[in-house]
Length: 124
Image (tube, rainbow, N blue to C red; front, side, top):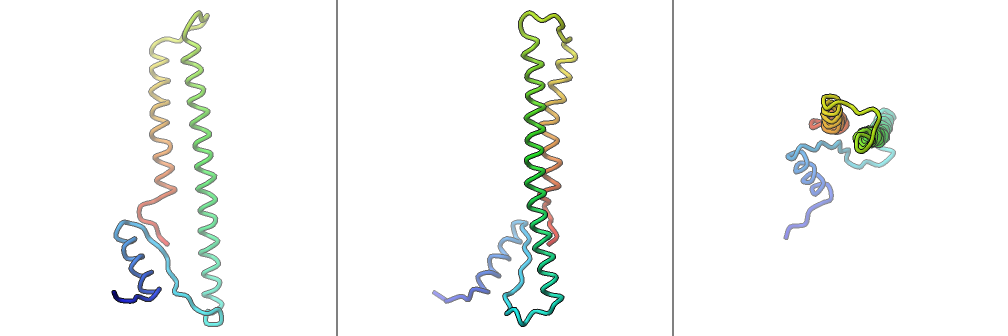
């Protein structure tokens, strides 16, 4: 069994990840004194950008989930309110429209936003 260096193993991992569509930015480890100020600044900016991206994904994900839960609760209450003795019943057309739009929202809203949050061809 051949002994591999850490750098070779990492390069193999990155090439395999690229085959399945994942993209990573890899900077070989350098000593701190080997980096120029521009390289240090670039790494700080990349790290800050990725941290901001992660926070945005968390915020959007939580917000989308909250909106979907609120909308489904509203639709569920309207539908349950139509059962039993009700003074103001909604017509069948209105109920069908309400259920159709809520189904479309459940499918399309997360799909559109998740495609934005997790693009297939990431630029690192």
